[in-house]
Image 1: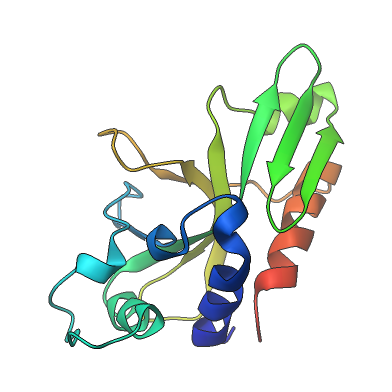
Image 2: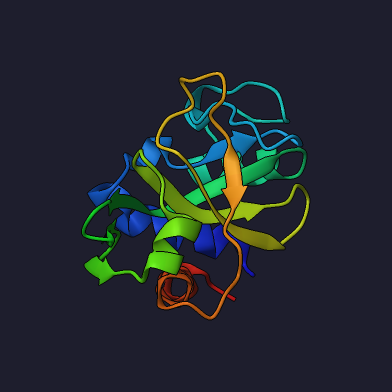
Length: 160
């Protein structure tokens, strides 16, 4: 994956679900969410005039980074999931899919980029890092239609 181009590609179209300047989250090694205010972070050899992408690339050398590619909301009783990304989707889930992936709160979905690498994991996070238990959770890879749709959306945004 070309991290720089992937960041630019996601930021260019993310305003449907997140402010482009608050896109990325730092994720601790224990999967808890850190800050998403990349433009105000100091250290990491960041210079005052560095662009958002340059700052994020410097941070990614020492920290895990989560890049959201959309937001999802689950509706019990109906077993539906609304996905908000570049395009919006309404998915009818099987009971098994709903039980496996649903959450009571809105969640961001996207990719966790391991520090100093181009490897990523598909997962979800809380919408903000305000809660002390806000964290990243890997989405279990399955052959379900839900997982396939999430992967398809992510694959359309990642640049190689």
